[in-house]
Image (cartoon, rainbow, N blue to C red; front, side, top):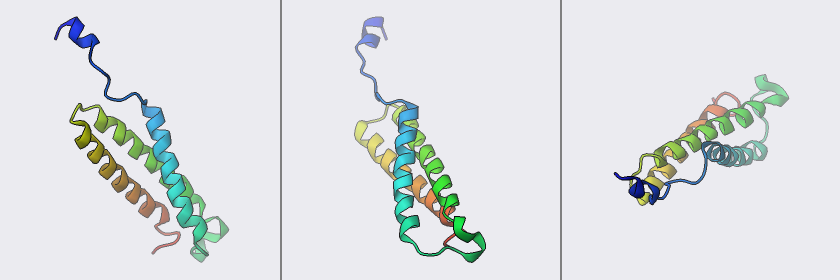
Length: 108
């Protein structure tokens, strides 16, 4: 590949890793907030602070989901395939974050 061909290539992604992680964590925080603040009482052994675990753990795992979308976009695959893989992977990671966050606090 010559220098002129390199200069004319468009970048695959204009968003940085940090931005994707913040967006992923924000989406995860919004989703878990609906579950946590819409719920009643948690398990009695957790006390009044049972909401802390899901509200901290789920956005952290959601940030990893955002990092996954960034990494999958860097492979240089077809745009449609990249989008589908990113969405499916992010929602799978978000689901795992919700399960781990609510495990033991609201669920057995």
